Amino acid sequence: MTPTGTEALRDLVASNLATARERTELLTGCVDDGDLVRQHSPLMSPLVWDLAHVANQEELWLLREVGGREPMRPEIDPLYDAFEHPRAERPTLPLLPPGEARAYAHEVRGRVLDLVEAATFTGARLLSGAFAFGMIAQHEQQHDETMRTCPRCPARCLSPAGRSPWAPRPSRGRWTTSAPRTPSRCPPSTWTPPP
Image (cartoon, rainbow, N blue to C red):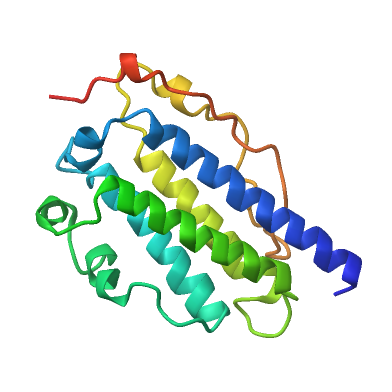
């Protein structure tokens, strides 16, 4: 990959990670801490679980697997393993409280952005074409869709316009950009948890 191509890919990775995180922050920022830790539906995790799970997966795949970094908080890995704990069990786990989950997500993202600055996106399959970075951006977007629990204003929390900015091209399997979804703030005063 040419230096110019690498720089363009770095910019794309940083932009898409930022877009996904902006959505996460918009969705969770309009919910108070008490509602973040509640399970609003047996089909869903507490929102704070999703928040820390997204960060934990980002740490596992990007910092540890791609970057070869030491674990930041290995003791929480089992808590945020979606295969180890079904949704119904997650409210009973000793999850990170909202402030700590946000701080963890912020610290992970800062370290990931440092990793992006040094990445060449060549070599290992996880690095080639920024595959692992795209996977993580998609993962966060999927959880953003799951976290859309605002019954009176779902359309205003996150507009479904546009495709994922990491949609794979069917013929070549490479990442491509498209119009990102447009986030908008969900006013806290209109958010009512389901019964």
